[in-house]
Length: 593
Image (tube, rainbow, N blue to C red; front, side, top):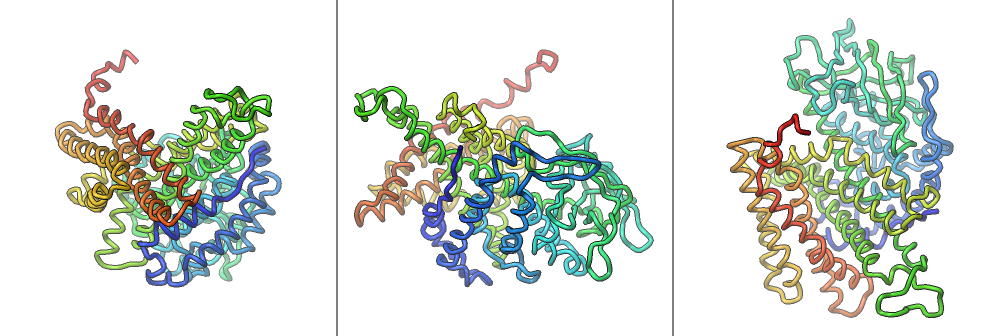
């Protein structure tokens, strides 16, 4: 049976030390969120994750959701857990104080959300989707709609979904057929079907608020003709109470490889009453507000699953007796040595550790820009928004790729026992696999990076990344204690810059060049970004160790060294792949596949 203990010491390091210079609690409205406050709430969050949610993870996976005549039943214990979660006020943490929320910084949520995903990813998806829906409604909804829906959603009494995909189209939303007709009362009548809708139907909350993409009358062709509508499962009475069914029904649920306790539904809208969100025919702008929030959330899922897989792999490696150390028995009083003495096992564990701690820190770093975007103004707000836009596809794709890699490595540490359900490791790999697919496949994230983010505003977004990081690396190259770590990062950073120039130049001649390089380029960008974060963490650890020995900071420095010497060198191969161009793949005849 697996175990989970929230990594509070490392989370405190990220928030208190690594991100201290960002001064999150000095932003307007963030004054009360001191490190002491964050520590206290994280400590309480760890208890609900370890004691309430984690024990339901395996049983939820084994039981799954049940569908019967349009109704969905979640696994045993989930309803009671959600009520306790709601009554304790956890859904209100991130929401605006205007609607009853507590307004915690997004930087905090990167840590809290990781705990939720480590302890029970299927459960985490129910409140996480509501949080994303609230973001879109609060920014684009009318005052009337906000007052009507937001307080109940913020309190966790009502939940939210995002309804994009249809049976005949996934990423290509220009093909959607769901349509909206004008109603006599000024509202819209929504008709159509959506598939793969996470948390589309359940009884955890008394109402479910669907955000639905549809075509309104006289809409332009293509993606520019899509509008966004709020469609509740149940109509809302004049007094704010839940009324009759709104012609919204669940047609079926999916039987999936993982996240089995999260209901994934086909949703049918048969003339359902809908409320326009944002401007008519401009629905994608509003939907992207929710999608970008969801993509950062999915990146968190990769980190959370990596963390719990790593914890259990370390525990097993210390307990499993197998063979003797190559340099002679380390535990001669035992029948064999624990497998942690073997170099290859240590390679696997350090790979898991370096990716997981690196992603936690990198995610927190980007979250500070999200907070600045929400709370600052003027040029600082613009700069922060551009940095978040640049890094969102990297966070989503890179974190979920390494999440799947780490959970697979965790299975490998267990050997044959990792393949056995009772040990829990195979569930983490199964759950992690979907994260590379939903909210835009990782290939789509790579295309978004090279096709939209790089050329946006004549490459201006890149300046927020390239200029400060180059300056930082140059400074550390002059410091004897950090030069050996800064040097490989400097070389990798140079390759990233050259690859960026190559893609920008070649894609103007042939767009296939950007497409062929996209996934390798995103991985290269992610590795360099994480390398920058590891160098910053190594700097802090070096400063702390100057005052005396400390196992925590020594482990941090040693992990940074492993990352720079054993993982960052992937950049050389990725760079060679990018520079080879598109010919080898695009010249291959389709008929030969």
